[in-house]
Length: 232
Picture 1 (cartoon, one colour):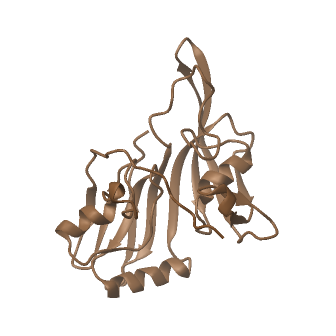
Picture 2 (cartoon, helix red, strand yellow):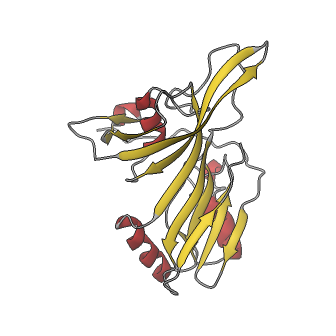
């Protein structure tokens, strides 16, 4: 079986990482869109959240990741012991994550649940697929925040829906593929149908932002309620 080769080369990201909170144990950051969470195997993909942060915070490790195009909240451990404690919370699903997104089209329902198992397929790499037979359970909730219409170019109306997305599991590309499954892909998603027809303006980025993160501080035991407003 041939090895999977990732040919993606990330364009330069000139946006700084915003540090929202720091203490002796962890960092809360706002990751910019267009920045890898971890450096890739290709030396051209050296720049990443971890690569930048470790310069100022030696020994820091990522507890979780956000996709290249996704912006928003990440918690970063300052050492391996804190990383283990935070990873335990993620694996036990006691961490609450909420995202904001712009979806293509107007959703008919105001809220709902997408329950569709997700599987890897080497033939589709880097895409994931919905597969009842081989997929791992995946469940996401959505709630409509507003339905809007924007003008594109020569007065071409563009129907969009702003939603709050809550993943109950943490599969790769979960929100992106679940929104595609819903029939309303995330605007700007190049993998799952969120690019607009020819002749319309190309979205500047993937319109997906991690806006809320709730967990328990691993040392103090106090609840951490982090919020970061969407830039779009």
